Amino acid sequence: MDYLEIVGGGSLSGEVEISGAKNSALPILASALLCKNPLRIKNLPDVADVKTLAKLLEHLGSEMQWVSPNELLIASDRIIHTKAVYDIVRKMRASILVLGPLLSRFGKCEVSLPGGCAIGARPVDLHIKAMEKMGAEISIEGGYIIAKASSGLKGSDIVFDKITVTGTENVLMAAALAKGVTRIVNAAKEPEVIQLCEILQKAGVEIEGIGSNELCVRGTNGELLDFKEINVIADRIEAGTYLCAGAITNSSITLKNVSPHHLEAVVGKLQEIGFTIETTSNTLKILPSHKRNAFEIITTEYPGFPTDMQAQFMALASQCEGSSFIEERLFENRFMHVSELQRLGANISLRGNVAKITGGERLIGADVMATDLRASSALILAGLVAEGNTQVHRIYHLDRGYERLEEKFSTLGAQIRRLKEK
Ligand code: EPZ
Image 1 (tube, rainbow, N blue to C red):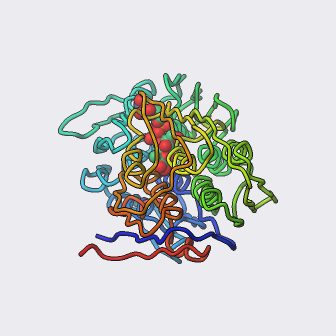
Image 2: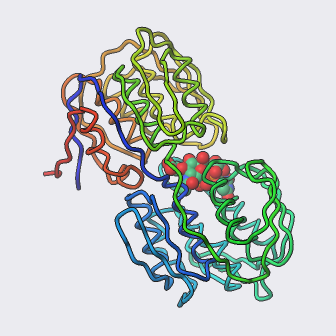
Image 3: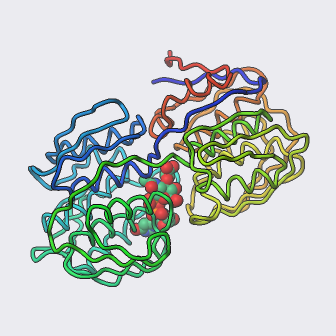
């Protein structure tokens, strides 16, 4: 296994290119199952989760041609079976995204129940209830979701009890080939959901309400879709992570190929802390601040403050004057990074789902362990300012969602290298 060694204390400078969004690439890949023509997808991030889902699609029978690590030609007109096996699904819960397309195209499928993960149980009950509402018969046997809809899925009113990103995406893809109209009430409206809606719309699916919490989808009644070439949107969480790298080291850095309007909550919070952020249509530049104020965050669905940026801001809070408070409202266990940040000397106390971080303590480098994708990035940020060396172990978590991470940080002047565990 690899680990990262970071020598703390320096400042950063220069520019970093933001990659395509992992959380847009995954539903887009799954939607290829609805496609009657070979599909070209550009600006895919070269990360493990994308490779895992591509492997699952290949296992189902899709034909793949990697034009480059970031560009894929995929043809799914000849799918040989409809079983998403445990061995692949266990590696990434977003594999659940094949449930909707397989069920609407073939009228049956078996999808391994994704395990939970470090940040919570992460059930898929809302996905299953929605498919049942659309006419599927679903049973859980041997850890698999066994789904049948022999007469195809039918359009229905789906009211989500909770806003679910991949739940909304699964229903969108199921509804695209269903018979009749599906209304999705309390739908997620993350930029990644919006991109999927736009792709389906361009492929011939009538969708109203894009960008709102209520979507109306008129299915093609089993007619496969004619997709146009796709360019994956920029990764707003990767961008937010690099903004936090500039903030925590109090440096001036520029992000390129980014969509600033997807980061309004994150940019607003950094401005509240004291940073100046200069924006153009596709770049963001953060400038050093003489004063970094404590802040409060409550994580909520888009366009609110994203849960995927919570850990990174907790690391930043250790460098702000006074006590900051972070309330995690989406996941029940997304504070795994707290104990690791405490190992570096951060002054953090927890009360239920609220973390209090008192700034001003010097961080001292140490061995720390990554527990989930975003927690790992927070440990790197802390390592950038900790005195001495920080070793971040189990960085396979990072490789799931950050492309060329140490290369990008090195370009910004960080002293970071990837080493092999002895
Ligand atoms: C997506 O996960 C993202 N992943 C996550 O990013 C992100 O943290 C999350 O949305 C919230 O923004 C992808 O898009 C691939 P949810 P998802 O369904 O769809 C509960 C990252 O780091 N829920 O919106 O799995 C659930 O437990 C990852 O890139 C149910 O109870 O999240 C959670 O409390 C981490 N039943 C809440 O809803 C269900 O059937 C929101 O989850 C589904 C969800």
